View 1 (cartoon, helix red, strand yellow):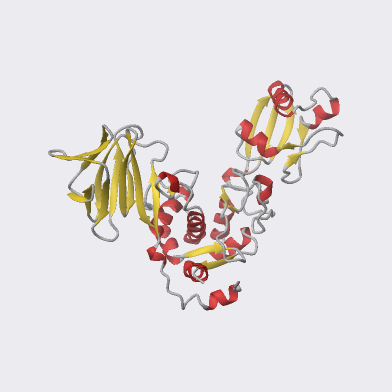
View 2 (cartoon, rainbow, N blue to C red):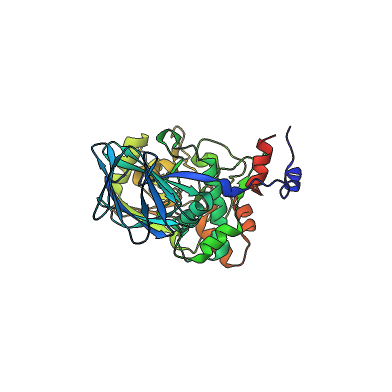
Length: 391
């Protein structure tokens, strides 16, 4: 039976399925796994288990080196060999504990994460999975994705988006032994949140809140850096139509750092690209002029010369091929050069981060900002979703 959202909201305070039970498994250093790391407790303490048996304690004064040696996980401290194991588990002893982790090979920048860890061999490297309480994860993603200098109301916006995105994609890496990775492919997650207390406050003030559609299904919470003044429909960029991801005019971001870009390319190279990649008739005078001087009044999805028999060219294809910041640009011929003047940064679907940041700075509440960018959606607590899926 399908229940209306009104009935769902009536049950919101009656159904006590706590979001605190939500744990995510995040593969860190994904696709660039280390061979050896050192770990140390930053806050609280941990117990390290090898093959299910306690091996040692980990606190702020102790450092343990963890290495893949001949397909097993080898542990040692500065003065003691702790043995080799097929599986390592590092479990917090107290709530709020966090652990420092630093790879010995490659990028040695220290990272810090809350909660528990599982470490297994992956070939000759280490697969490291952070088993993290969802709100700790969300705060870390918000800081990685949005920085530490925005108003709290914007962090509430980004928290809801990150939480929704994570739960909607939590099976993406299931076959690899974890749920989400730490890269842009899922959401950037390079550390726990440390730089600004407003990030934790924004996360806690929206705890458990996600975005759902009219069927109480989690939405695809797409976002990008800057839309250049116009967002896109979902089907303009991806294959599927989603009624909550609709194009709209957005003047909140047009004065921001990523609202404008400029790319120059030799005219001969530009015409060669159009000819070889798109079979464009560059020797036709009218068609040639159309791709050397083009100034749209707003975002278009395809370049559509008016000449009969000329196929449309997707701007998103040009963007990917030429590694442009967006698919929204004008074209101007200048002597032997073509100048592409562009607007925005990213795919343009869903929430425009710099636009939302501006709205937050002007005093708009987080729920109004989310409704501005996502069409006909609802903000609900996870308990509502859990209740109706159990019916």
